[in-house]
Image 1 (tube, one colour):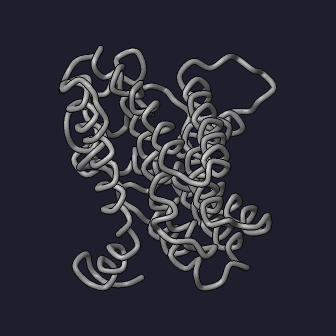
Image 2 (image 1 turned 180 degrees about the vertical axis):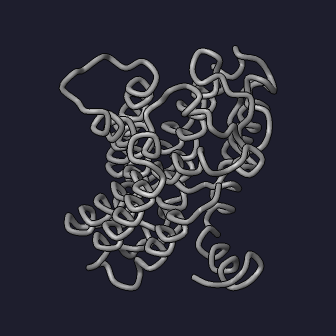
Length: 300
């Protein structure tokens, strides 16, 4: 994993994340052909295209490839997953929620347009995701299975937002258990779903599906622990969004509960767990192993 930002490590990351460009082009084409009011289309384009890590759709495609499928097999659910993710970001940033001014290094959608348009753009991205899968993925039985998987994960993600911002006081859960429940739902649900949908598109057997499910669960939690660490160790300029916002709002975080060093140890534990999940999938799963390693040390 050595090399500088312009050397082998950067080139390797470019290879791993190559599907991001394919998904971007696919979403742009789908959006262009779908009749929408001009201002709504432009709001969706602003939120959906041209920025972001595209981690979730990359995981859809790399998971599909890990069990013998092709990128083409998984493009529709990969694009749908990114639409769901972007819808969640737009609504998460709203004044009634986290009230953020910056996302992906530029003004949030409600600052760029209006609060009403941001709500409606988020709504239509969620609808477009299911329209895309149901109309573009074949056979119909696979489309139905993937739609069901994506719907369940979307609802779990929304539940995680409630656990995070509008929690009920449940005395039976310790703070760390509450935090794990938040992350499992708010962040982990879509990452787990990404891996499972990719596996489904390749016709994975039960053993392969279970392996990719375990991998998705591990990297999903690991991703959020890293996010918690970045919030307290990086600047707003580097992150492209407000730093220290979780601590400022008094939210539960891994560094807040465990400290920075223990949180880093948790990242290493989850990284090893993700690798273990892929043990029986062979060389085709190497891109997933490498993605896990990059996620563990990312700086934004």
